[in-house]
Amino acid sequence: MTAKLIDAHNDTASRLFWEKESLLENSFHVDLKKQTFFSSLLVYAFFMDPEKTVGFSSPLSYFDVLYDNFVKELQKNENTIKITMHAENLLRSDKQLAMLSVEGGSLIESVETLDYLWEKQIKILTLTWNDSNRLATSAVSNDAGGLTKFGHQVLTRMNEIGMLADLSHASDQTFWDVLEHTKKPVLVSHSNARALCFHPRNITDNMFRALMENGGVLGINFYPPFLGENATMETIFSHIEHFLNLGGENHIGFGADFDGVNCLPKGITDFSSFSDIINEMERRNYTTDLVEKICYKNMMRIVK
Image 1 (cartoon, rainbow, N blue to C red):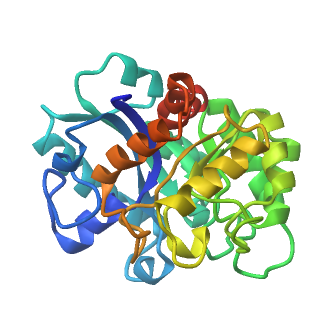
Image 2 (cartoon, one colour; image 1 turned 45 degrees about the horizontal axis):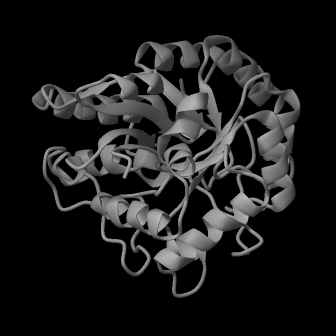
């Protein structure tokens, strides 16, 4: 069994601020004690929740509060975890690794805002959440259009500095616009197969084929409404194997959406359930190489 794992999306950092719990041990899906079996790199997203940002002077000031709180949690546990901007550090780190992302481009007021985020070690930007913004339209908003002119400028700068564009939550038109204009692989951090579960948050087979051609990677989401009715671990594997059947062994990983969902599939409780998922891969006779690709190597390639 591989002891290395990359998960491309959780909302733990935001919950730590609002619920005043600890990164070391909490009542959430993710904490350091639940990770002890793995050498892991988790992408902690600062979620720009529109309902929460209204209480602050700007979305960027809300980000700052979330960020400062999470950094304090990291400092309290500096012997166990550290921030990285390079996933390849997972191969040689003796600590758990945290990679940082922003979920929702509503805080991008100018291209220079990206440089501010980059200085804060933000590696990934999810262009939209459920609300459309100045960059692009979202998957569930029913807004017409895709990537805006400003969004094009932001994407160009992201490519220049090495910030990864995440297209989970993006509308289909945004997805196609980004793939037409990006010069770098993209991430779809927490989405599934629309062919198996018809939801705008999932991607079509043609979108996945385009993602493969781009060199990007999709993270399998564990949220039951994106998996299918009465979701179980079997349902998770149905999505994994659907993408494998499309030729995607080098283009899928995990983005469980832990701490951003109000329910999980039957048999999945929290981060520690990855042990059971990997055991199931081995029971299904996945090769060691395939297990390692899905668990960390594919994600490592694009967030290197």
